Image (tube, rainbow, N blue to C red; front, side, top):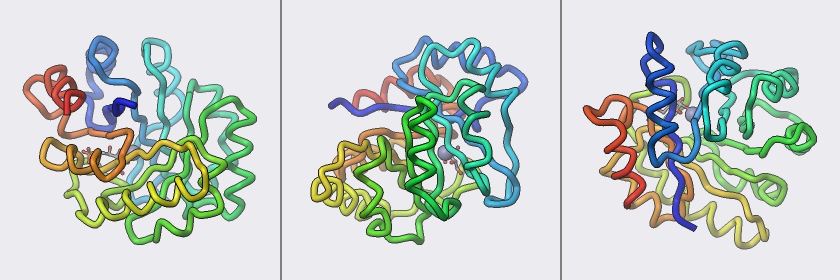
Length: 216
Ligand code: DX5
Ligand code: ZN
């Protein structure tokens, strides 16, 4: 499978979000990556349901919603109603992860699990068969524009092995500090989906940057 690219709207221009959404619609990007932060699980607050509904009203590609919030189970139906196509929850926020994943699927969304950089990949051994996406954080979640953590390459290879061993068809997504200097190595390690915020929206020509990241 050719790899997928999901620009992170956290780095878009919020004063002209429509323009950036249309740019992604017309580009070679595959998904919109939408970061939800609550100021509790992570030390930053981003946006919630009304913005996501408005994004959905003009987006022509799936909304890949990454929840960085405590107690995500309380809001699964609300994210579905706001237009999320994929819902990814943190391992660290779900004491009943298997049940959370199944609730997401019951709401007719693709279900993802994400782990922070300090948590070993093997913690996901008994959930990978149930999920559609495993997201490996390559920075500590909460902010765009952070420095990529190099141990991510090994973590992706390890996850790839785990997926094979467990017969999981989950896609591997990587998020944080992704740019032209690490993208190829991430794909070689086994990543299927690259998330990129600052590198795309901070570029002089975001459309061209997207097509360059797709060409790798
Ligand atoms: C970080 C978010 C990322 C972020 C990526 O907590 O989950 O999706 O927007 O942004 P960059 O690509 O700038 O690191
Ligand atoms: Zn994210």
